Amino acid sequence: MKPIREQIQEKPWLGWALFILTVVVVFLLGLLASSVMERRAEAVFAYTPKVKHAPTEPRNEVWGQNFPKEYQSYIKTKDTTFASKYNGSAMIDMLEVDPRLVVLWAGYGFAKDYNQGRGHMHAIDDIQRTLRTGAPSADSKSPMPNTCWTCKSPDVPRLMAEMGPAEFYKGSWDEKGAEVMNNIGCADCHDSETMNLKITRPALVEAFERTGKDINDASHQEMRSLVCAQCHVEYYFNKKTHPGVPYLTLPWDKGMSVEAMEEYYDNIEFSDWTHQLSRAPMLKAQHPGYEVYLTGVHAKRGVSCADCHMPYKSEGGIKFTDHHIQSPLNNVANSCQVCHREETTSLVADVYERQDRIIENRDKLEELIVHMHVEAKKAWDLGANEAQMKDILMDIRHAQWRWDYAAASHGGSFHSPVETSRVIATGITVAQEGRIKLARVLADLGHNEPVPYPDITTKAKAQAYIGLPMKKLKDEKKEFLNTIVPKWKEEAKNREAGYITSMK
Image (cartoon, rainbow, N blue to C red; front, side, top):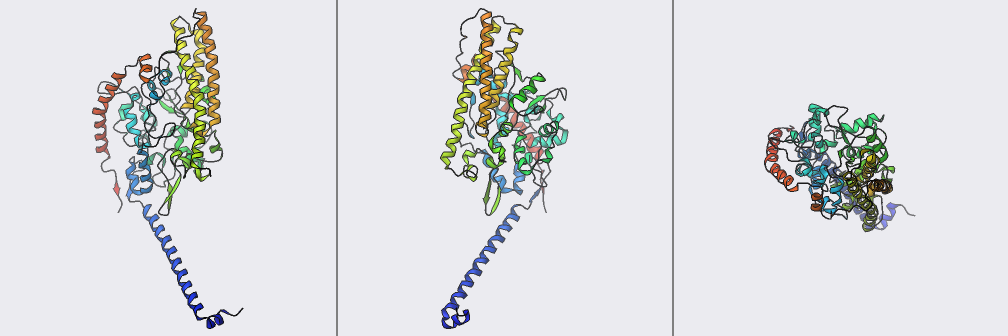
């Protein structure tokens, strides 16, 4: 082959072609370099702090000035339009959907009001409005303790830093109403200096310590679940370690399974309330989402909560975590399909199939437990004594604990369908055995016929059956929302003025 120089001499146009090709390549490389520099400058601009604030700054909009992309995605948690087959982001009156719940929680606040939770930006409004927190006024206190604020706001770590956890937990729920006004957000999970993930609720740290673990040893990937586990766990108000203080505690000392926590509660003779009909010492599962998640395949594969509920996204060449915390079913492409190559319709159908099968059995367990409460009440009415009822009451307690554990785990039928099915199955077994014992007691008391199942086909009928004065409760809450809450908001506005220190 002839040298390039000779080829160009013979074909002058070849030199021009090489020249033009060189110019095009240089031009394209220049565009690439310019794009890289532009994206780098954009990233630097986006993450250069624009305001200084205190480490415990509770206002998410202030953090948002330094991290606008994360904040802009976070405010989408206010959206309530997404609905799946079961629940979604809209507020749903679960007592209307399933009136049996009223009877299961007779004598407890959840019988008054239980709504499907909305996004994090609604946390304060929802807890203020629920009938469970009562209607505190000038001459009365809320029936709920301050501890109920723990998972609702970044004002909580601020107050705990000022006064300590035990002091924060003291008193009734309304006492800190004007202090807790910012919705769940940045300071709940992040260190203000490094932006590293941070545990701000002491109950989780203390639970690790009691089991011989140091939460500071957790990896970054583990922290992407543990910051969620600050709140999405089972807990109770422990009044023994700090006398007179409902100290928030996680019952993990014997393990994190439904049986281990049941044993823990039984050993310390703890109950959340005494059932109004059956007189059983009841347990109310909170939301053991983290414990159930750990038993599922995603946890075993190292998938964190944030991987599915807060997947990474890119805008303008910048990769960041999407803080629109939501159901993966509303974001299948960025959550599920990162790993699973099936079509969206197929993936969603798989989720619904798991939910359908588990809820079918869960509903059967609900019905059995309602029977138990009603039949136990009949036994008491006929003159049953404590000795006759002791084992039966424990069966009621254990059966409903298993039902509630499965129902309150929020996504358990997807996170861990095998474990959730097992828990429900053991609950059905306990309930059936308890009903056999009840039948024997009723027979001994001269009652050999089925106890009629109450007409609880609607929420109103169920609440009337257990004797709840709903109109009075609603009127009191309305007055509270129209008078006291506006005062709280004004106090908070005045207190927060001037918190920000602008950077020079």
